[in-house]
Image (tube, rainbow, N blue to C red; front, side):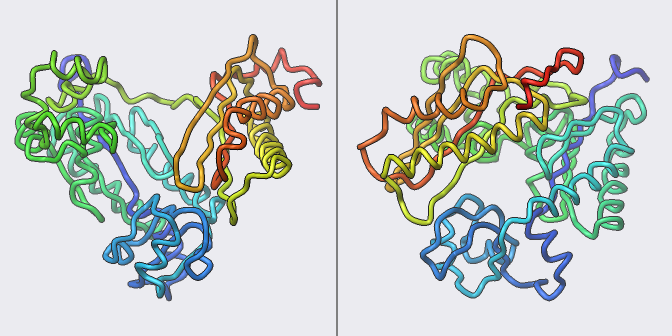
Length: 362
């Protein structure tokens, strides 16, 4: 049966608490303990956030993105570990190599997530379920880690399904079961519906996916514009996106959370220079030019803003990153102390090997 004449079957694989699971795998004495990976808590006065944590730590209310100081207050006896990105990336590469073997089309979307299109090789959900279980078994056998997989008619349902029964879950949603699966869920389970959108939906009396699916789409457009249409389609299980062989790099960025809030112009300038240097190094390593420079600032009271400026032409000029970020920073100087600064570049263009000149790397 050809792919064009059958219903598509998509798998979404999500590693379980990836960073902390890798740490526990390599340090068995941590098994069963609350493990928090992120910034140094410094006895409860540390800056920065939790990158991820074990399921044992989540029982104390700790979660990704939480200030590390709050995590420490919730569970001071947890094992607090610094982020070891090289270890996680190396492990991720080995896992993704395992997954690729089973895929006709493969799309890695983060260090611990991937979509799989099984193409023409499998056309029924029984076989797809067996394949998903085989992938789980291979990841566990070769890397000693568990993952959760969703099997569904498209990407959005597969992603929601992979999170449905964590950890070590396998959730299958057949086409005839889509509404029964989606409609009882809270709207926050729809990708893209976050802290800003949820309160507005709640004001409209919409809390479940089913309520969103049955809402008049014109009302959603009036409140959310084009995103209203997208939300309505996703709530009804409609997602026409295909699994892409390769995910395009859209941005390169880095940020720094300070041990102590800063306001001195000299310190700010030095920080932006260092961040610009890191972005430039990554840019050249990945062989991209950029057109837009972005700045991210977070004040001591957690107010966060982003600004961007697009240049006339694509470039690899390190000074352009530094000077533009400084220019964007002027709006915020003198308005408070800063907890975090970030610099990034977008609107990237791949450098053609044949057109590369020495000046690109000086």
